[in-house]
Length: 315
Image 1 (cartoon, rainbow, N blue to C red):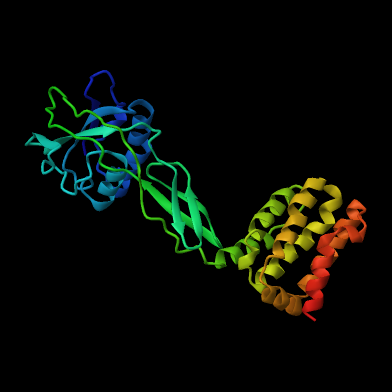
Image 2 (cartoon, rainbow, N blue to C red; image 1 turned 180 degrees about the vertical axis):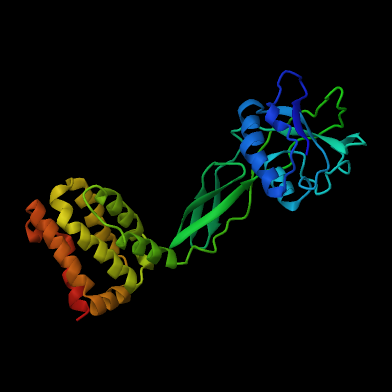
């Protein structure tokens, strides 16, 4: 295959690795584009107009190659841009089937701007995201994802390889695709995260990391199942022997708060977990251990009364 990318202004020369003599399949071609071409263009060619050269090698017009190019290179979004069907592409050599296309390579800072998605269950806020990437945000019990894609944002004029005349690059903006919110209520992710933690060996070296992870998961306790309550309490029990060797912040801001968050679990789930695994009694034991660690009077802890009430309600 032959591939080249030259500045129409003539003052920037791509590295020699852009010219490859060996054959590539579509996977190899996309890897070359991603690991070599894209990195070079992002570093040196931001906001410049270029002429893109390549021959008619079989790897060039494949669906995978075209998808990568449509997401990363501009004015190459036509499905028929190889070789001269597109108004921005033209043959340069009939013997080698070499073709050239005008492109605009945008700034590496090209992004989709902040955006919101209103739904019946709340409004979701999407942060500024770099083009060609997915962003993940919390969504109820799980996460939602959304892709920031490119749009064809430049108007090109035909060029000649001799003069390398090029289009004027106009401002670029990314385009948000429709969000994927199909996993928002998939609670299996919560259970799997808790199972992963229970399989870990918890010691004073990782207790802070583990307790933070549990606290974050427990913030979604409104979606907990009885199994999730049992798993979370099991993790908390493993951390109790360590509370005398860790900072008060870890105990109070992570372990104790994760218990507090779990009170938001629907009542019927709390009752089920207590009846099957005695989780209410076990949580009370954890709170008692924390109380002794900090020499609290039991009457000062609202958590104890809440847990006792829960145990009482469940019989």
